[in-house]
Length: 157
View 1 (cartoon, rainbow, N blue to C red):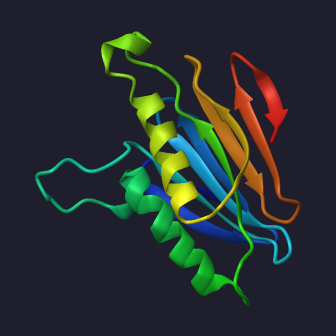
View 2: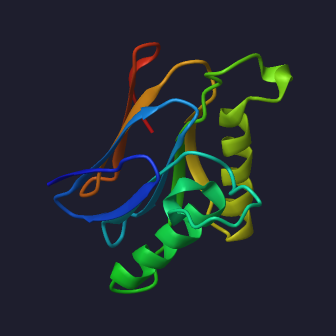
View 3: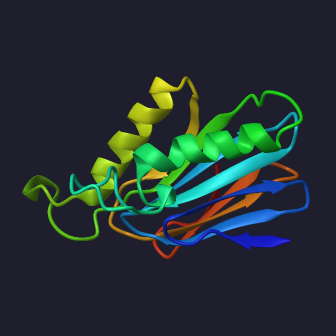
């Protein structure tokens, strides 16, 4: 079954599922996968962290809340404690020059690396940065993560 992961969403898939996040520009697709149990999850995050106004927002919107929420959902769905590896896709600089402080993609990448390091989930592969959008497709049965972009064609992480 194809499970589309929209902006500010995170989903868990099992053998037979394909998780897909499209149009990852400055957004990140964060994939957590356990090859032993063939269970995986994907988050499609928009920003690194919430604004300080405290307004309620979906956990999947921000790197700092989406990764722990996805991890909790995976741990609940797994038959035993998952042995997860991460892959990160996206984080392009879509809105300006890198030095002008508006590089949301770079801030998303930095936040994801920091959160994953803090919770001891290694990053197995990345396709991040640049100035182009990507689509990520995780085949949960095989663990293959295909990344499509108009700039880079197709690659597997």
